[in-house]
Amino acid sequence: VFIPNQTIPQAMGEKCLILDNGSHTVKCGWRSDKSPENLYNWIMRPKDRRRQFVGKQIDGCLDMSNIHITSPFQKGYLLNWSAQKTIWDSIFSDPLKVSTGDTNLIVTEPPLNFTSIQEAWDEVMFEEYGFKSLFRCSASTLTAFHYKQTHTDNQCCLIVDAGHAFTHIIPYHNGKQILAGTKRINVGGKHMCNLLKELISYRQLNLLEETYACNLIKEDVCFVSTSFYEEMELAKKRDPSVLCEYVLPDFVNIHRGYVKLPDMLDDPDEVKKPVPTKEQMIKLSLERFTVPEILFNPSDIGIDTMGLTEAIVYAIKQCPVNMQPHLYNNIVIIGGSSKFQNFKERIIKDVRSCAPDECNINVYRPEDPIVEAWKGGQLLSGWPGYQNIRVTKAEYEESGPSVCAKKLNDSIPISNT
Image 1 (cartoon, rainbow, N blue to C red):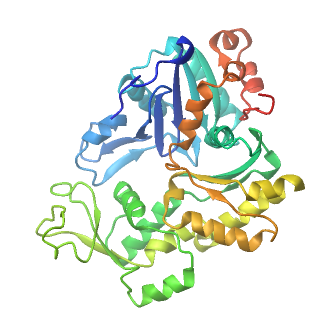
Image 2: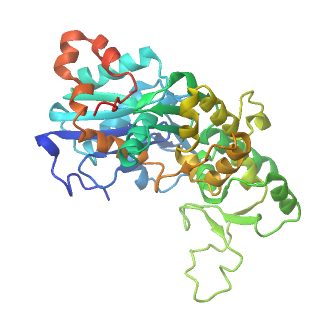
Image 3: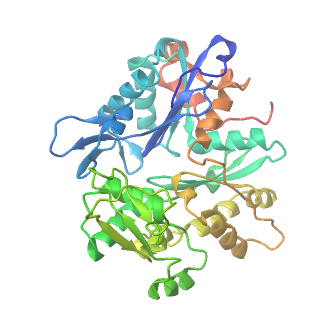
């Protein structure tokens, strides 16, 4: 439960709001909070109703079947400002209760964002909302800052952000992004969800209109294979280690689907979920690991781009030679897709086979990779250098968008502090 200002008083008498504005979810909260509120960055509207659900209101939508979803993001970039401001208005009023005039804002944007979108972003935050100050950067930059502050001996790190629309691989040295090694893969959680919808709809039950339900299925049952062909053989044999049954929600007795374990109804002491008389169930086997596999082999769905392992090695090779061993040794994975079972192990295995023998391979996954960028923003808000890298409203009113273009360059230089 989100309770503003529940633990630590605001440092230096200033309020700071951290807003990790992803294309799938918004992670938002005050810097004094233990953890952020994690809300869908969508506007949901049941097709047979006029009412729309935004932010925390989505929890009150009991029937998610045939839900129509409006996203402010298109292909990973913020384009629908009307929808986004509707979502922000809801978040700023409840649960945050933001008074923008005396609040400093740290907000995330997609890596390599377009200048026109950045200028619109600054205009909205200063001229429409009237925030006291603004610092805008990518979630990867905040993650790199957090990693540097908590691993002080390491000057370099490679951030792998497996997000909803894209997957970015970005190397950093002392908080500064190395553009030559920055790589984007046009595959994300959205593509996996769409593929899963098609596979289930073709083989079993039409779920093409059930984006919300399929996204939950993906999160519940999918995993990354560390031995793809062996898993395929197990799937052919309908091995129980791969085959699973998934009970779909009917939004009357069951509001969220779940995996039905073989012994769920046999053990009288087992805590059982309510199962209706006529449960709607699907069986999943090879879909569980072939869907995440497209991140490592995008050509499987016709996307002509390198896979994740190849992109990691390519990004590191574009950096100075003396940095490369340190980047192999400090790979940080964040984003929703990084929570797949065996995701970390697959990266270690594949990168090890491509990297020089003398390089150590170390992959760090935070305890909660979805909120790691928000924690980086929380740490940044109390960092002494924060006062120098943000843009105040007075500076914006005096110099206009040029001061934002000059100071907000998606880096947090920390080598001299």
